[in-house]
Structure formats: C-alpha cells, structure tokens
Amino acid sequence: MFLKANRLHRHRRRASAGWVLVSAAITCICLAGLPGSVMGQAKVGTTGAQFLELGVSARAMGMAEAFTALSDDLASVYYNPAGLTALYGREIMATHIQMPADVSYNFGAIGMPLEAIGGVIGVSAYGLFSGDMIVRTYERGTEVGTGQTFSYNDFAVAFSYGRYLTDRFSIGFSFKWIGEFVHNYSANGWSADVGTIYDTGFRNFKIAMVIMNFGPDMKFIETPYPLPINFKFGSCINVLEGGDHLLSLAAEGSHPSDNLEKYNAGMEYIYKERFILRGGGRFNYDEDGLTAGGGLRLPFGEDREIGFDYAFQDFGILNQIHRFTMRLAF
Image (cartoon, rainbow, N blue to C red; front, side):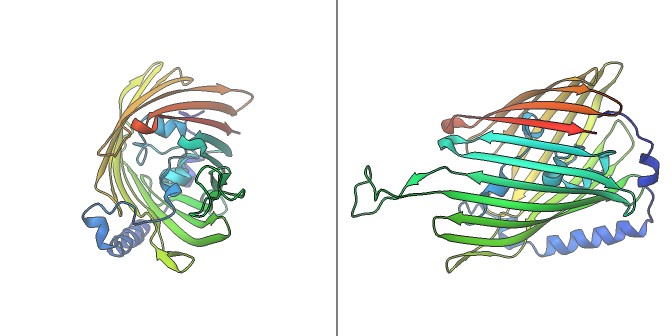
C-alpha cells in the first residue's frame, strides 16, 4: 500500500499555477521574519520549548531524520506537512521514546484525505514527561529535599493541512498550541510550520523545504523567550527501484535559530514492500551521530496495512535512545 499509486492521485493534484506564486510569497514572508540569529552564530540555550525539536518517528530517525523531502506518511505532520498529500486513506500513528534521565516522550496522530476541501488533514499531539523530581532548597540538603515532588511536562496539539498546488508541487501548514508546565508555573503559546515539496518526476527525486516553529515569544513567569525556529532544505532520490527492491537516499541541511547549521544524511532499503532497513548520520551535532533502524509492514484486508518501526540513536555521553512507532493505514 505504501508504494501503490491510488485512484485519488490524479484528482488531488489539480490546481492552478497561481497557487505556486502564493506559496512562494508565503515562504518569502516567513524567511524575512526570521530573527537575525538564524543567519549567524550558535546561541545555545536561548530558546524554549525544546521538546519541539525531538523527532517523533522511528522511521525518520532510523535514517538520521533526513526526512524533509521523503516525508510521505503521517509523520509529515511534524517533519513537513506538505508530505501529507501522499496519504490516500486514513492513517493512525503512535510513537514512544524513552529519553535519558527517565524522561519519556510520546506522539500520536491521525490523518485523512478530505476531497471536499481538496487536501489532507492531520491532527497530532505531543507530550514530554519528566516524572516526579524531589523539591530541593538551600535550607534542606540536596539528598533529603523538602519532602515534596514536582514534574516538568510539555504538551503540544497541532492541526495540519497539505494539498497539491500543481501536478508536482505540494504545500502544507501546521498550527500548534504549545504548553509548558513546571511545578506551579506554566507558559503557553502557538507556532506554525510551512513546508513545500517539488517532485521532479525522475526516480522520486524531490526537493523540499520547511520552516518549523515560527511564532511569537512565549512567557514563563515574567520572562519572555523565543521558540526554536528551524529552516530545513532537503532532497531525496531512489537510486534502486525495480522488482522487489527499493533503495532511497536522502540528505538535508538545517539552520536552527539557536545553533549552527546541521546536516543529516540517510538511506532506506525496502524489500518486497514489507521488510525495511535504515541507516544514517547526523553531523555538527553536540553529541549524537549515527542512527540505524528497521521496520515491518503487514497488509491485511483490502487496502489496509499495519507497520512497526524501530530506531536506535547513538546519543554520545547521554547513552542511547530507542524509538518505537506503530502505524495503521485503513
């Protein structure tokens, strides 16, 4: 099902060329609004809501998150909403990530095409949970604390929409509500993502870009802080396609507002549309580097499929991170 053409494909990709100009204008406006820090030096620790930068898909992380151009499943609501146009039926996706220091991160999403509005919509939710931590003060020892506990929790809920503007060009948007909760304090705000994908028509060679977490500052107690805005540009291509084999390569560069440029490269090999191996590398990051993973797709019934993906991420001195994703298409 993942590789099949669908009867809805031709209908969805009709639109006027004028939409391309509209999307280009939106992109230029967003780029013009980026703070100067996006174009320069590293400013680590100057943005909040850092959980928005944690990848949500085991498939994407297995290939080092070089996923901006390859986005063609429900994880597009996070990586590039323009990729939602690859959905030809309803999908449900859920991911669990066990982070260092007993921190857990969970993601869930549902997506479906709506021919009435000529596109695909997605609704997603993100949650990061620290677990209970002991309240410590100068007066009480660091071991005993005050006898109270607190937790650090982050949440986000997003609505996404993607559609074809021409037979090869798609655009997508995501709008998020963001909340951060620490002990008796909280902060909330909103952000938006804008993404595009251009399909050249040759071996699935695609060029894509996305601006993530573009929005106003949030305020914690009385202190405002910016969101982790990120600009990504990537491409992908099938270097082997035929028979039972499909091998895709992908690469991308990113320019976060609080750090230097980062680069990702990865590959995905699919055998008989069911068995998958992935690998990749992340460059110019503080700790992590190599990633690897695999997946299994099991069709059942008519036009139904369930998929399982796993990814391993080497996180340097912070040990390893394991991601598990389940996907249901129906």
